[in-house]
Length: 434
Ligand code: GDP
Ligand code: IMO
Ligand code: MG
Image (cartoon, rainbow, N blue to C red; front, side, top):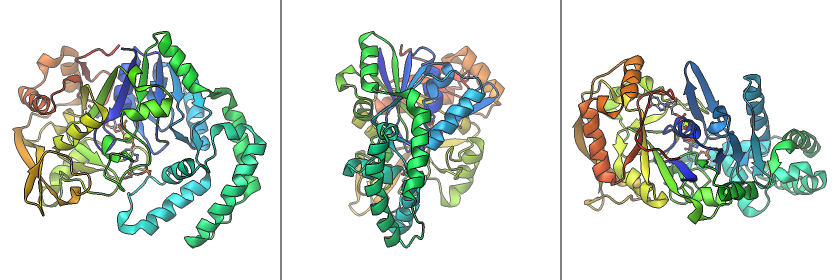
């Protein structure tokens, strides 16, 4: 199985970092193919916690890592991440696509201003400049990593961009004055620092596949945040589905051998927009309990995450649009101690008085979840979960098996991995992928 894509099957923060790190042990290369430092991927090894925003999570397995053309890069953040890893004595074997687009400070500024302007239609972005940078890419105003290595190109492009962005700032009544020369100077410096890593990555990746190297493609965000298939406009600005790995890394679809969907045993959402299974109102205590127990606070922004019951209508939709072959389920331990658990298996569309298990992407706010109720399992200490992981699937609580069986019956795909704690060791592998 040389080429495996790992993606989020919900609204992000499913545990992609942990799963990528886990499977990266047997991989040769790990590639990020979309998004930017809106992502926050956590890897816990023993007592150490690492949070990655741009560098693929495989880096702490000392693997070749690649930031593909589909990503948007804030060079300052990337350089900080490189420095941090170096300071911890990690080997940095990084290649950056010359075609990845660059986030400039005006993108961050505009991100905040656009959000304010959109009001009720805002997505609650991470304010990392992601949307405005992708806007420039699609409008063909974008500035690429390649351009940071060539002053003449950077100068020509920045001249146009600064002029236009200055006008935009005025429209938004923002008083910031953009300093083109300062930007040129600053970003040429970043370019020099990044130069050793810049590469024509599609050639590298495809050659590696020809040589039967094992490649993991690490998705960011989640299916419901996809610009094309998510709950628009409460989405991010890139393609978070498995197809994004093809365009965002430069590999043809038939080269992908397997797609793994990472799914939390419940769900979380940072930002705005409808989440039918959100636990609110009289049940808020349950949400608070899960949030505290599962440390459900944004890895990137620190915002408290909204908590919801597992929504299988949404995951089944994610399975379809990405052709997910197997599910890696995370955070089953976090649900420990809850007497009853709910799983959403259909929606009632309110105005139409119609039941459906097809994701109504354009009217999710009108959907009432239809639940089945399951028996929960007892709470355990992290060490107890760890011991269970050591023993394997047979040792997990019977009610947890019931929960997993129900999910599998519904989704009609197997689990490849069960995660019952944040650490590498708190993992039960059911399927090898390499
Ligand atoms: P990502 O963006 O998909 O990589 O996910 P995040 O790193 O933003 O959020 C997932 C959080 O859950 C992180 O704090 C992980 O360390 C943690 N985590 C992952 N898997 C498990 C698990 O099975 N159990 C527990 N308790 N925590 C987990
Ligand atoms: P990882 O990779 C969860 C959400 C934001 C907002 C919307 C658009 O860690 O799972 P953006 O800054 O991308 O323009 O914001 O998408 N969002 C995420 N939510 N996890 C993420 O990444 C996210 N990246 C963006 O909260 O609603
Ligand atoms: Mg995250």
